[in-house]
Image: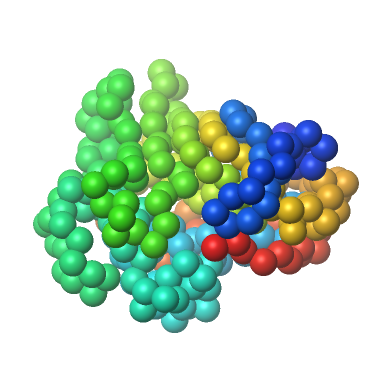
Length: 274
């Protein structure tokens, strides 16, 4: 299943449209879909070593509704530093705020938003438990009214969940913009983990994950390492185990999710564009 990601890398390297953008020159292509079966394995890429701790800590940060980047920095996760350093490490009303407090006025990363706005995660879990046939099991991070307050408008903007007749939870995520070398591998694993956690929380089995990408792009400065990765032979994906009490997904801890059987190639480094 990792081969579809490598094919996307190769496609961008050989056929991508060269474009000048806000954050640098890229090779770009529009409209792609990746599909993963989560029932037997977890899509953590093996053609380069992935920072699984960072994936878990960022998702936990989202699920707490936090926008305070210092919380990630305290855990030695620095993926949001570049976009928030000039803002005092306040990310603004980004992913977690929209997930847990959609519609609430934003007054800073240290404010208490308890009971404010729409808790979309709670609503989704309730629907999956009590109305699994609903066509409204949708999580949205796209809030045009607050984008001017955000450090970065959301790239992964919506998630739709579907419970099939065999009680399996499926997810289709739409990503308007994908940094294919650095960001997309993180997004794949994070969305797979979110889907698995929601399935666990709502007593469902886990099914498939589809990621639909609008603008898929490879930064010109990442082309060299991307070409190395594209030539690597993938290992089988690892497995995910979850051992945690059900709490509405407020208190996810790194120790509660484990990856088993992760065999991977060496890490490949590249600078994140901001």
